[in-house]
Amino acid sequence: MNEFREILLPFGKVKKSTLAFISLGWIIFLTLLTTIFHNPLLPSPLKVFLKFLELIQTSALWVEFISSMQFTFEAMFISLIITMILTYLSVIPLINPIAQFVSKCRYLTLSGVIFLFTVLSSNVSGLKMSLLLFGIIPFFLTSSLAMINTDVLTGEINKALINKKNRWETIWEVLVVGKLDIMVEILRQNFAMAWLIIIGVEGLAMSEGGLGTLFIKAGRVLAMDKVFALLLIVLLTGVLIDYMLKIIRLWSFPYLTKN
Amino acid sequence: MQFLKADTLLKVENIHKSYDGKVVLRDINLEIKDIIRPGLAQGQVVSLVGQSGMGKSTLFDIMSGTLQADSGKVMVGKDLRPAQIGEMGVVFQDYYIYPWRKVKKILQFAVSKNPKISPGDQEKAIVEIADKFQLTDHLSKFPSQLSGGQKQRVSIAEQLLIGNDFILLDEPFSGLDGIMVDKVTELLDTVSQNDELKTLIIISHDLSNSLAISDTVFILSKQEGKPGATITREIDLISRGLCWQKGIKDTSEFRELLKEVKADL
Image (cartoon, rainbow over all chains, first blue to last red; front, side):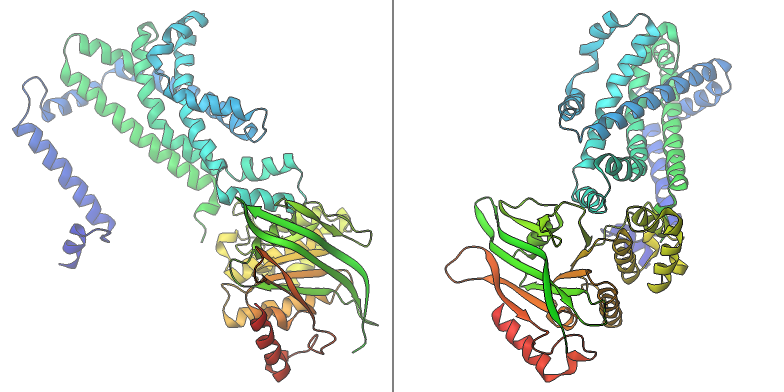
């Protein structure tokens, strides 16, 4: 009875198993709702699920899936390296305006800069990569720059200087080593953004393949069950990678879990 | 009680600090001298006391070199050279022990910065200090696995290994229970009696505990009609016979001293 009351109260404390039941309940509820009141233009949940099962058994999906994953990881890696360099160097007054400008570039729309990158890129692959980097880095950088402007970090930097570390040693100890776990967390939080952009970018460069091209092709023939099944694949992949990054972070930085 | 006050070790001269036009510190002047006791390596323990919001932390930051004063200077050493950041060790109230480093690594970094300890002797120095500070069993732990008292001991051990003559302690008794406060008091007492030039500067609003281990007290307070806080009084506890005594807190003279200081705050 108490457990039931807790479910309904703000800050209610419930067991993990109860929370899993609540989530399952919502999924069933929403499935029923969309089945009963479904829009005739949209596929029913059952149809989407059947299409999903069919899709994951085709090799065509996996070829495009692997292509998207490979491209995403490549872009994420390059973005992370560029973000880390800009973040660490942003404490140098000469470099700070560059980092701030790149961070502000998040307000520029991707479609607005396509022409620029089309002119600058020598091939489709380069265009895709530059668009993706442009889409990801400003968001990465905004999160990582926010990490630098905290009181805790100021205290840690002062502590390093008081402990006779020179300024470069201080950057290494406090920003690079000390905040690596936060960088991985930023990577995890922004992965969704990267995953979102890549599907869009792949749709712009059809010849390169990827899940984005499957979306375009399915949309052209109004195969909405396939579009929704692809969305489900994209969602599940995102959730799985998010979970994996969380585990990798806790495993790589044991001080986060030691108490 | 035989003693002699010899060379000046630290001098704070005419420090002013304002924030947004509001004067926080005004005409701060203080001097700490080398106390010599025949046959002993007696260091100095100075307390800087004042009410909350009086600018103690601001003065602390200026002395440690992490904050620039509007005017005035802090000078250290027998040659009274301008103090640079890194010349005064600091034990922060919230310790700032890097959570990503194990205790041993923290101490290794510290000892590597001590020019008086050769690389061959660094390991020995860590073992000795860990033993003295009851940290031997905690060397392979991360700071998050330590209690507040243990973190403070790591922080003090770190500063001792770096080897600065001056150590600033910000509210060293805050957040500790009664037993831990006694242990810290004893520890600071021991530290101050190991090196002639070692000078501990305690910034605290805990009068009883900080005065009990000090040889000199500086009172930071406001003067009527004048903006900002300044050093309004210096009390020499040695000449009053209220220094270097075990169980001093139980004496009536000490209780009188507390009343006197409280009245001046």
